Length: 87
Length: 140
Picture 1 (tube, rainbow over the protein chains, first blue to last red):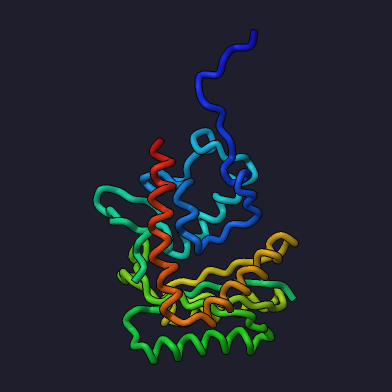
Picture 2 (cartoon, rainbow over the protein chains, first blue to last red):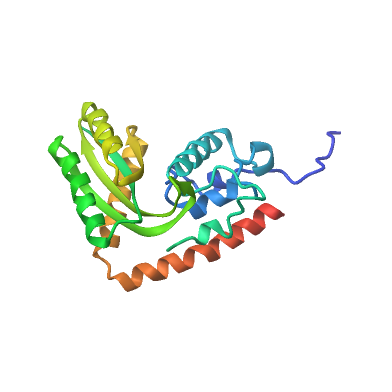
């Protein structure tokens, strides 16, 4: 008998939503793949597939260059609700 | 001809007229190099995720255009000289999938531009609510 899985099977949320292209200006959509410290979340935690992980990585890096998403958040430079920074 | 997108952050210290003037100057750079601007998207003044040259805010402006690939280096050179710009990000839309996305973005930007200002605001308010849901999912 096969060993039973301890965890719920992970699936790629982007595959489920049939995402073909990600826009780096759409900051809200990036939040899922970012950690609390604004690091890019690894695939083993989010369950993203390789294809979508590659897409999200480039998109996040673009958004960082455009100052839409912070590179890092430390205790000194805490960004209070950075995604609600409209005006 | 290839499709491109440029995001430009203009200095927040300028007055409204000066910002408009610098934006028209930027568009002039693109058109004078043989580019055709398909759509423009004004994201407006917003807070930067991190300070750039000691500025906390910036005026975001996006242009979608098609141009010969050889002209991009010249455009970027001119952007670098321009002191009114804090940042610029150039994105290439090359593959079929990206070109399709580009067309959609252009349509979206044109639609947004034609809408009255009041409706655009509603959209912006709706965004944070969706974020919180996703953040909760991550916490789980």
